[in-house]
Length: 277
Image 1 (cartoon, one colour):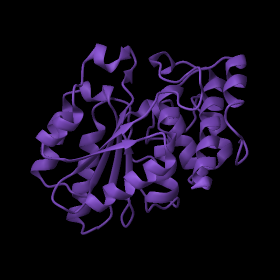
Image 2 (cartoon, helix red, strand yellow; image 1 turned 90 degrees about the vertical axis):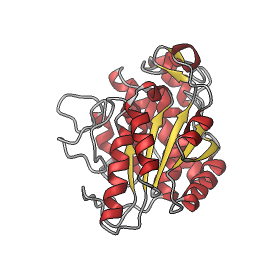
Image 3 (cartoon, rainbow, N blue to C red; image 1 turned 30 degrees about the vertical axis):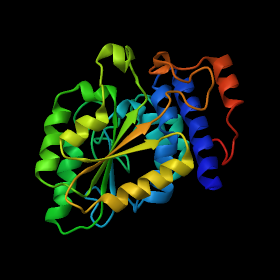
């Protein structure tokens, strides 16, 4: 568990340094989801850095809220999908590490272009159905923003997944209560997501997303609930900007980069555990 926590600290450092270097990107949601990505890739998923697009014989992950690409890229690099030094190319011209993940650069670990919000649920369900058709017993995991649920396509997909008994899917909602223009309750109130997903006939869990022990336990519990006729959703409570005191809990850090002094202050709060790239 300590190794996972150390990895999360280093990934947070990567996020901040990547976004600062080009003065562009989305640190807030990336920092908030660091425990989730760390637990998923270093403990929970069966996956292979020797990347094959079809993903046969392994678990798959789809990032729907693609703007939090910094945490995804750092996790993939530190999992062995591509060299750590490539993180220096984040958001630069001709880089494989674009601001939102894309596929035409053939970056290992990326199976779908994402960031056009609302589409990831449909993609994940399609991949899960493909595994069923292929007799592949492995699982599909996906991550979605809570503000992203404003997009109507999600609810069509959520209804479809239950109707088709897509019970090899674990979808997680980053429930941080923030989106680009402000708190979700002001932009478009979500009310009870637990009640909504239950009404759509999903198995619903809740999880504290910034506690590594809770995330590992929660994801393992979610896995145990698969194969029972219903898709599984985790409502994951996180704090935007987690780990950096002046970023925490504010939508203002959704999509702006720290300046030099802010970077220095932020990195001082996060131990360098595995070595900076």
